[in-house]
Amino acid sequence: MANERHTDVREWEIEASTRQAVHPYTKYHPFRQATATTAANLLAIDRGEIAVNWVTNPRIEASDITMFTASGSGITRSTDQQSVGAASLLADPANSAAGEGWYWTSPAIAYSVHPQHITVQAEVRGASASGSVKIQITDASGTELAVSADTNLTTSFAQITASYTIPGSTTAAAYRLTVVSAAQHNINWYTDKIMFEVREDTNAVSTYVDGASGLNYEWTGTANASTSIKRPAMGVIRGVQIKNESSSAGEIVYVAFDSTATSSTGIAVLAGETYESNFPLDFRTNVSIISASGTPTVKGVIWGVNS
Picture 1 (spheres, one colour):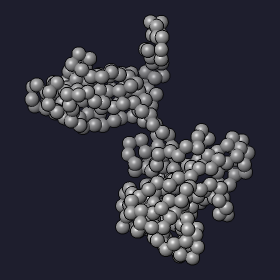
Picture 2 (picture 1 turned 180 degrees about the vertical axis):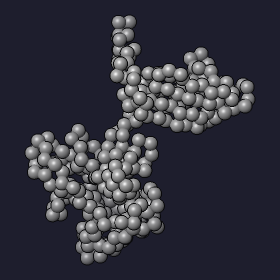
Picture 3 (picture 1 turned 60 degrees about the vertical axis):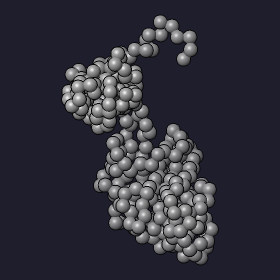
Picture 4 (picture 1 turned 90 degrees about the horizontal axis):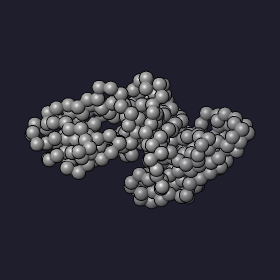
């Protein structure tokens, strides 16, 4: 912003509403890390994406792979390769034609007067560095609606994506996510991190989601047998507890909120001591730390709310 004036103070200071003031803490950020004599963030506020994955065994951790249907290939759960977790889906194409692989069928996507955007993604790895595959969105009969570029298989996992916009006022229908050979070949490949999402706000491909991805990720039912969600991360810092684990008196740690920590802007946490806020805070940018000397380790938790 340019041409700021003192009268802009209402934009600089946020007055929490009564509702916000009594909101219970619903977010937390645990930490344990070494500090340095250069300031660094313990936490920088970033609510991140909100996303949903409809695929119920997206990292192929569960032994049941009946949610995936072979098409011109054999498919098995394999622990030989994985991008995440312990397993992936191994496809063995019949080498009779292009388009051999497998598909996953969505539940019916409900009627809406608004356009709806389907995005699909997966990561693929070849059993050898040859052959090519692609990811498609098709209707329930297999007619292609959208497709990625052909991806040459390598011995590393690579992401493939596609998106399709369902026009507004389309009758409710199921759709398929398919991963198939782009040209006829007999090279086996592994697929992992499979995701199918439906949104109305954007056709951008979300960051991969499953319930075991970390903080703010959750299965909606049984792990590896249900859909999964990504909740928003912390939007407001409401409390902090931080312990300086050092036993050296000179290794003081300074903690600052919504600014860069220095010895003059930070709250001093002496070696071996703990700082804990004892009333609700309302900071919305960052928690910064710096050490006076050395690299003392700090540990604790930052509490907060979504907004």
